[in-house]
Image (cartoon, rainbow, N blue to C red; front, side, top):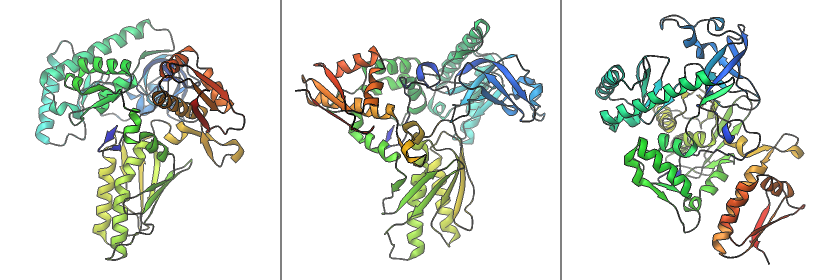
Length: 482
């Protein structure tokens, strides 16, 4: 997603990558699964659930509370009151598998719609924290309460969370969204009774539809897609759930490649680098360890004529504004420690913290920020839901003995295929030859007919792959075949 010519959101989903868990390689986050309780560990207040994946899912007692059927005012029950070993349980993935850990699960499943989120196992109405106007909060609460109680299409006894997209929606729009979610929940219940353990009984939307649902709103000017099939999919979803957005969806036919219009490839490449330049000439450096991510703020050669305090303030304000965007795009989660340049004035410190809070407020992933310490350090947390971008795009470099990372074969192959598309457009009718490292060509050839057919569509006159043993993994070249 691009906002004012800058990359603001980045979603990565690879369907051809071998070894990835999930449906056709799609992410697991949001899927509802029928699993079997493998082990119950009272000492950890958690259970492990067999989902048919490489690793069992982790269900904490606080996420299993709804299974104990206790009144809302009672304390969190023991895990043994929620589940028993060997029983079937319906759970939802709330965090994808990360590193050597299995998926995190919740028994309190939710089904997101365009305007509201259905919470089948919990009654009541809640609203997004971004809806701040009290009169509007009351109006939406009353409206949802009335629809939930009187509309026969609504899921019986369920609760709802109102999304910010509902602010501009009519009663009919909200009622239609609730009806669709009710139908979906009834279909999930039917699949649950027919399924054989373990099974996935609800898939979250595919990437195109999910991006339309979560990323497109009244402020969106247009949606550009460079694939006719994906355009049809996006328009079909918009016609069902958000008719006003249908006309915003456009097929991109050039000139050039879609990502080249705003240097998206260059911005993604920059996200793999530790240093980020700031407008005034300073920079921030992001480094992630097993325990935490540290962010260092440096003013570089910039100096403010009015003195050190103003130099530090300006650099810190620029850093605070950029940090939220970098955390979001890089997918960094867990504990984050920011080393701002020292400030002596309390009001200046307040300005920096305010800008930092505004910067992370655009993030859908929950964050929490603590006050600045006497040493100029700000601690914050961002919920981990997926692997960070650096791990998706690179891996430990064996010759570096674990001290460095290199791009994966899949990442290099994807870059190569995009180069093929560019060269095919630049050389219409020419047969192409690709020179690359043997392991990259081997991966491409192993993907089967689907990928080959896609390549033939780009390079109509034909394409030939030639391995080069002297090429490093990330080296390749594409030219006209003589």
